[in-house]
Length: 209
Image (tube, rainbow, N blue to C red; front, side, top):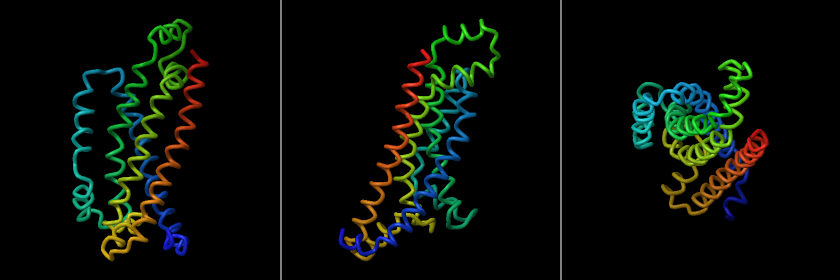
């Protein structure tokens, strides 16, 4: 901890890089996962091909995934971003599908009886009720993305992984501890922040019921 306290500027710089990489990956992952989830939720025949493919992608070792992309994009931010977005899809898409399918059919039928269109039902009924499950997926994906982003340092994408890998190569325990503590704190912050949003979504969904 002594090294960390004496090098807070360096730790903060790498933390900001880690937040930029993790946050960008998570945002893009959500933007991609939502339409996929909307497509799969009402069509159970798509479960196996779509979720199966996403599951296969998730089994690819992270370091191998990063390295495979280097010849195409070179080392750096984009090469790290693509695998992080891809890995998050499994949890995000599954939770979108689970959340939408968990909405009470009677509620949907009542909305139809009121003359609401399919789009209105999705936006005004299904999404608010499915939100807690969907946000829970975002929370899980956020924590795993922060962890996986540590490996991104190996492809020159920056972030707190630099402290870990440099610390190991130099046998410098201070850097290893600083990287581990900062990454753990960042994961905790993501988890707590999104968890608070999830709790509010639960409260709102309970009120709508």
